[in-house]
Length: 276
Image (cartoon, rainbow, N blue to C red; front, side, top):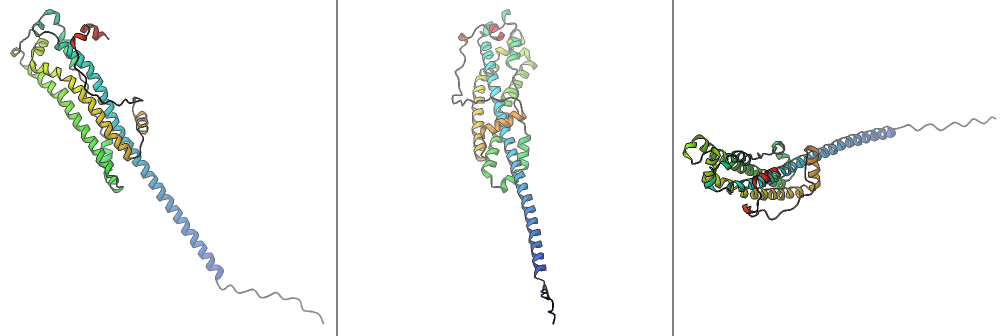
């Protein structure tokens, strides 16, 4: 009797286990892919926001430092004006109409040719427009201190313009519009005879010292901004270097802002000094 061949076992009927497993793995894979995509997008968005805030902060602090630089340059220029004013005020009043002083008119034009002072308001505007974002991040100290900086900058500009433009124009217009009311053979002599004008020239020295004080004050406030944003002074200077020409590599901290008035006896002849 022949042996029957081995009959393979009947295949187990798949009751759906593999199907559900496949579906579950597919679902998990899709979910993980969505989460990764969403998470990556969120991370990139947050990273971009952080970079934008950092850029805005650098723009703000760079604008403040640039104003300090301009004010410092103006203070340096005022030292020259102060010296020339000292020369003019040292001319004896009873000698002003002497022919030897007929040329002082050109020196008056020089001593009154002051630089203007104004800051770029674009960074201030950008910061103001994004202030709600800063509030949402809880950067209240930074908001407050930056606000103080720009408030002081605007006040410094107003006071600077008041002295070097408004007061200057008021005196000049008063004498030019009615020259016969003032003693002096020439218009320059009339200016130098005027007590208010002479006092104005003598005040240039104090304005120079005030400018130097304001430079130190603004930089001190900006240093607080840098600490609040964990930004180094070098970062701010590098930012200015990239966006504007010229910044002094090493800033010297100055604590003595007032200097004695110039002693006229220590000065060389005015013509010699002007040639330098």
